[in-house]
Image (cartoon, rainbow, N blue to C red):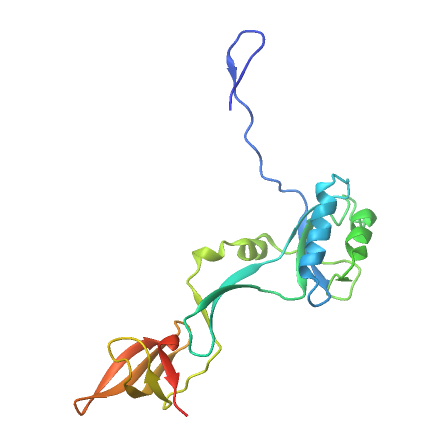
Length: 204
C-alpha cells in the first residue's frame, strides 16, 4: 500500500515485508506427548517480545492416509519426528560462546529434555535439512499407512464396485496406493479386478 509524501504529495512505496532469516535451527528433545506444549510455550514467549534471540518453534507434520478395518481411508495429520521440536535461535554469540539466555530459556521450558547429542555444543541443522523439513507436504504424493494388512493369497469379499458380493483371492498388494488386485471368477474365468483396501472384507 502506498502513502503520500508530506512534502510533495507523491506516493511513497512501503518496503516489502522481509523474511526473517535470523538464527539457526536446532533440534530440541521433548518428553513424549509434550511437543505441542513445548512449541506453544516457546512461541508465546517469542510473541511477548522478549529479547532472547529465539525466533521460532516448529513441529514437522505430514498428512497420511490410514486404512482401518477395511473402511475408506481417512486423512490424518501426524508428527514426522515424535518427541522433537525444531527451534530457530541464535544459540551462539559471535565469539562462539553459548548465548546463555537462549540456552537456559529453551532448556527450562517444561517438557524439554535438552538438545540431543549429549554435548554442550549442539550442532545446527543445515539449510538443506531444514528446507526438507519445511517443504509443503501437499507437494508430495499421498502416503498410505496400511492398518488392515492384506497378503497375497487372502480370500476376500467385494463390498463395493460392479463386482459387489463376489469373492476372490488377493493377487497383488500395493501398500503405497492402498490398492489390491483381486482374482474373481466370472463365468468360470479368472478376472483380475483392482480395488481399494476399503472396498473389500477379508474372509475368515
